[in-house]
Length: 106
Image (cartoon, rainbow, N blue to C red):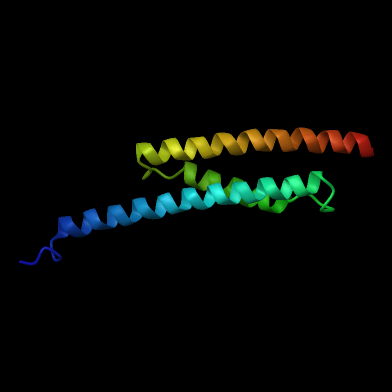
């Protein structure tokens, strides 16, 4: 009997593939947050006319989708929580700055 045909081997292999894909999603989310921060910095420094609210909504949706995933390991959950807390801090900062900018213009 070949080890490749073993059901347990196939299940274990698929779990590793799933964990790797979740790791990649978390890393992609980190990159998206980094790009979003740059986009907001450009907006607040006058380089863009409109804030990148659409991109912020996409990142927020991806965060919520990953939060509901029950297959995260403890290490992945820890990394996700670090990314989510960083995004929350940025989101509050952007909210305050947008509010301040709106008061100055209005």
